[in-house]
Length: 418
Image (cartoon, rainbow, N blue to C red; front, side, top):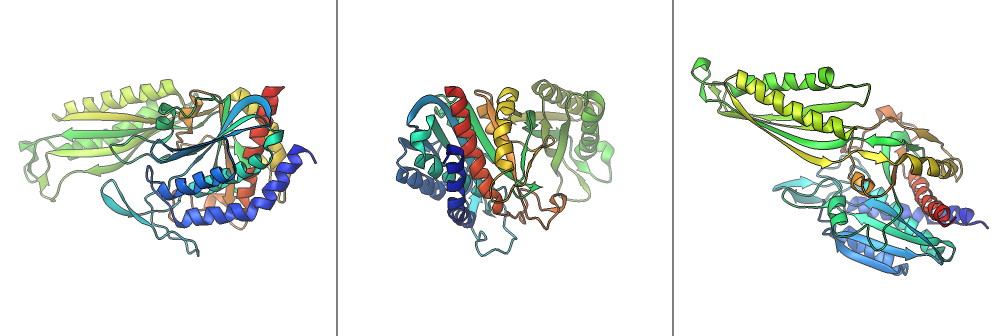
């Protein structure tokens, strides 16, 4: 039996176990930098497989396993994110989450509303398969189980950036890294990929407009930060629609929260706005930041108010290395066209969501792809999206994810050896 066939057979045999892992993790989600139970399960599993090295406590709760193949060769990394979201689940499942936790000082429900439970279970399955075939592997596989992809709590470091700072891409340095994300935008088992910019950069925007409090019946006696803020919100929409070359790349500037005032007849002293900036090009990203600041400050000055603009860069653009992607598309195509339920592969549109997998891609070539998990009786455009309290997973997509990552690792290492 060929190595490829052995991987497929092992993935099929592991399918029930991967689903069981996923359901257990789904029922017990944990927030970023607090994935203690999840990390313990992962570490125990990797040690039981006899991996050459298992490190815990990386970037707070991360787990990194190292598997040395039986043949000499290069190194490759596979990554799964572990954290849940502060979302209260509304799906009626026997393994639905009832978990509660504190997030930034507020008690919240916790749910794997983005599918990271699937990612962890998939990579645990891949580790099982490759450990069982280690004598046939030419090189080293590094398994990265990452905390806090959904951002760490305020005031804490975390996620991919902290793992990198703590040396996750060293000893050895992988020649490439692969990661996946389950998605409701595709039918279960369909693989989606895109070369080049794939997911947007993500930046936090906070604008504080300072006016002068006065009676609502006499606005001329003060400076109205609410009207000024309204003008700023409208003005911000012209940055994308009128100042960016959208033939180059799309972009988004969104204000998602406004807070100011406590009573209908009092014009308040100040208003705070919070929003997000998304782009697919680092040069455009910096240009948007500059224009947001100039526009907000200019509108405020014209209204006799002042404003403070604070933009925090979060995640860079998730950019799939074109050469690596082209080299590995045949592997993804083979995976998508075989197995117990062949579903196919497609090039997907850019996604304005963001991923901190992008930090890894800044240092080594990376490929981040998608696996559909929407049931066949639901049109993907009508399915509840990732991050929804009603996000559901057709678990038949998990087997495709297991085979995809296992084959990518083995095929990449074989190409390096060759």
